[in-house]
Length: 205
Length: 205
DNA sequence: TATAATATATGACACCGTGTCACTTGTCAA
DNA sequence: TTGACAAGTGACACGGTGTCATATATTATA
Image 1 (cartoon, rainbow over the protein chains, first blue to last red):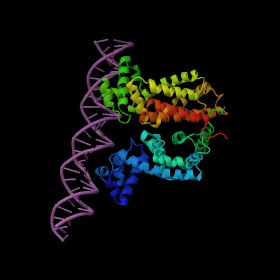
Image 2: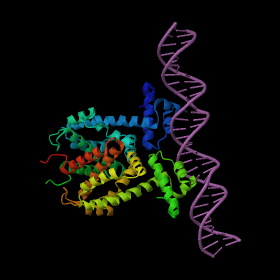
Image 3: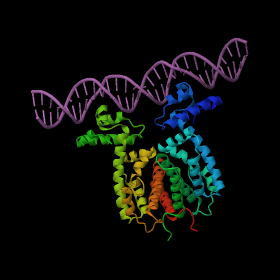
Image 4: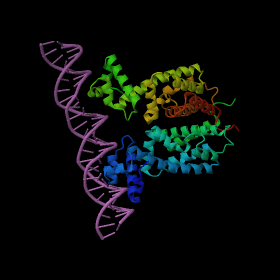
């Protein structure tokens, strides 16, 4: 987490710094991004950067988690709109993310995050479903989910269904961002895989 | 790919270098591994390293792909033993990888690879199923798979089933290596998720 | 208001890692 | 023996990180 000093900063200065950092992390993946570029863009001294953040990672994960938090909130409301149908909800989410990420910077930021997926980054992306099946946040999501249609006997299995759906969705994002798939193709593939998940990979006996 | 010079090397020298590199990449993830350590361990000059490899990544992905190639071959034979049942095969593979990776070095090497999963690393891991559903390698695997029991209408869907199973398996590996799960817990979870995939996440109508 | 105490800002610097290059050493064919 | 080419070498330039002594600003206190 950023240091207190960062949060004490006057709004506009903090904003400038965030914008500068986002720009750098959109330009290059974490390992290639440089603090020199960030401080130059934000017009602050190198030493100041270290007043605000522990290091590069600290700044990076602060930004990433900020972004993800917004997405998570949006997912919750989409899940409600879809009456707790997790696969329909995640399909809508996928669709929206592909066609509605507006800002070029934001898009490249996500792209870099997805393509150089450290374990930590992946955890950020799936943070909504973090921890084990009995964590606080997990309960909230589990409660929202319509279990009527799910092929489960307890909440633990619901948790694993979420994990499965998330893993597959995540992989689809990575492929969309790395490959030359059009939005339409990507969404079609996503739908197909979600249907396979719904109905089962094996024939009913 | 390593340069020709590397392949011209006398066996024992090449072997030493490989061992030294593996040791370093087991010690630290790619971004933190240092060429200085490799050349020191291998007792060669820094300049020599650059005679053999383009850079650190070049050496890394050469080693990783070598390892993965062996695993892939093993997976093919396991798939045959399981009469083309992809989920049974991948479950056995998972089981074997957890309990039979013998060498401490090799184990840490994999662990680092999985935890700092760049997109390239992930692609190496799933290279067996690389390309689209009509690629040469993909056909070989698809042909091995027993489609009798699969809930599919064409080979394209088989391809996506493979993608799904792989994504879920991959995530399980990452979690096993990052978390504090015992081998038994990890395998139990893996089995549960594979069963959910087989039977479908949603109830049959 | 004056002064002390504390918080913030700064950039030079030590340190470390990368990739290069001019040079040395080895090999092998003529 | 010699020349040509392949392989080996390590000093070095460059660039990035994180630190620290010092300067400046802000706030508290008398």
